[in-house]
Image (tube, rainbow, N blue to C red; front, side, top):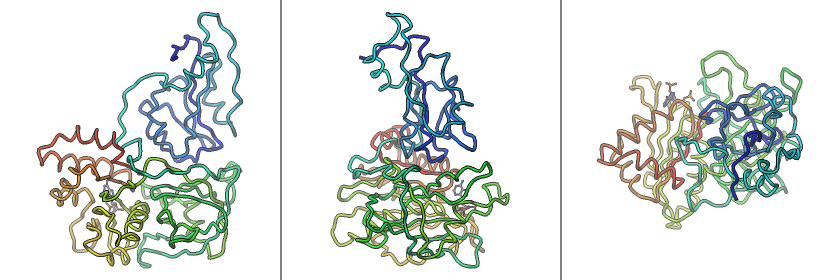
Length: 414
Ligand code: A2P
């Protein structure tokens, strides 16, 4: 039964600080700005949250999905939540009056449901493609991380360029670490922050497929850009990216995860992938492409179409190996924005240039679209997909809804 809550009872939305990896996805997603953070925790303001659930599916760890029935006047404040190291124990509700207070059965029913039905729209799907393999998440946590060994660390951009991007290979030895393409892991950088607390984990997408960076080995790879300035161009030292880029072979790293249950590739034969990325957003595209490459002779593959944005060829990670892939295996479209002597191109420009082929793939229900990289490209890519669809005489809003519902359009931007 789905009982209405008495007015003095609140179904309070909380975030588990022990599992949260502070990736900011929930704060960006919340349509009513109920989620905020300080240097310690991400928290939900009980006075603003309407229980719409928009933030729940995109959360890679599931830490967002915590609810407590509280007497409204005793709801945990934002300030209280900032100080938490773990969620407080559940409290029994005092019986307010026999008619109004929910029974324990009613209370658990209520907790299983969103408190309010607010319509919200995410740009992408909140479910994986129907045929995606089952992902494992949160096998290793902040409290019990696992130790991986660095077995490779090399630069994948031109040495003379500003974009210092590394390909880092981590080996898990005997410990199980099952992953899928599109998932991510958390790295715990050593040391403490300005408040003297251990650094939070930083999230990185896998660049290798499920069977390892080297097929059959218990390892995986990451694509990490050394952060030396923030998005506005102001000097800023990236704690974890610099730590990772400076690691030497045989160093050890604390890892948590895996994370992610929606940005996953279809697992059925002849599925097509449209992959749209900038810079290090190429990591999941490399993982998916490599999954297809390893089974190139099986006849199972659908089409691969890649739109990849970078400043110049020399700043495009994995440029050499990418260009060696056979043309009939992957349709590669490079958007270079600062290549001397060439016009500035973004991925969305190339999507428009290739409208016919994009439309053909979009018309096939075996096609999934993945977008990863700079947040700024999200709108541009959606506009380009809308334009090519409309040019073909189709209604984009209908197609967009279908792509989301069927788990066929996925965004991971930062
Ligand atoms: P730009 O030269 O305008 O910065 P970065 O190297 O900073 O990670 O960026 C990767 C690529 O993404 C660059 O070519 C960059 O172009 C491009 N880019 C920047 N903003 C957008 C945007 N809003 N949409 C698409 N691509 C973008």
